[in-house]
Length: 312
Image (cartoon, rainbow, N blue to C red; front, side):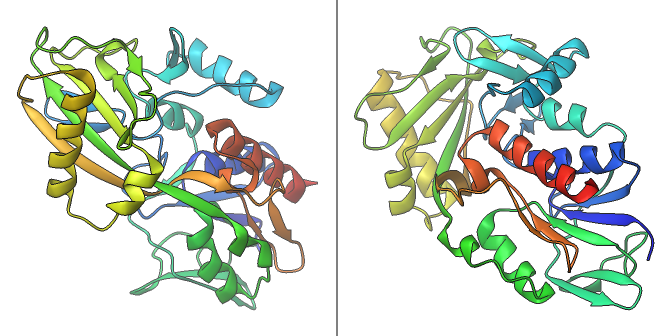
């Protein structure tokens, strides 16, 4: 069995695990259901507009992530955002892209089933075995996806982790708005106190490295509001959040662009309470912010710790 590992999920946790494995001499392939990488550390681009519609910024408390963030800043992938933390430059997606430099990532691969054969692990999509180099001979698999998505994958592999079912997430609807410069008067960020609908407003164009000519704004709905409207259409949610935004800020300008995006697994409300899950006999592990808490650094630390456990 070759020492080639598959990581399902190319968010921060999966990238951190891959970095640790590669540093120890393992061969690694990251697979993700999306075209890009980074998960909720995403940047939406629409023509000349761009929005950090997921994670807005990152902070570092521990040595490991602090060192990684310092490296990203030195390479021009990150910069401090006054009063908040660090952001990716020119967008939040620059952070995972910088961390994943040199790693093998295959997109558009929604893995549904894991099977272990005589030569190693096979990862399959709804259409059959994933068409990636090394499939059928993977020495082990890391699941770096939200806990609800990890549950059926772990079950297909025969891994028994009852704690996965305890993890709870809050969803989040995000509204992306663009206005003519000067038509809205907003600070760089705002957390409305006691607002039933809106939990966070950011002027994305106030972040370092942004070069667009429009005033770009990201609005995050509160967990309660997002849950109540979870299955509504993007158009309906965009209209309601725009009305709430106007009521909260007093803005009257008509946006030149408005669109909503649903993050079904946005904020960890109840974490596992362990840094990662690992079944050494099967060669299957799982990691993510859901192991530790609702921070980008928690995702990185979880993946890094699992990678260290695997490599010994």
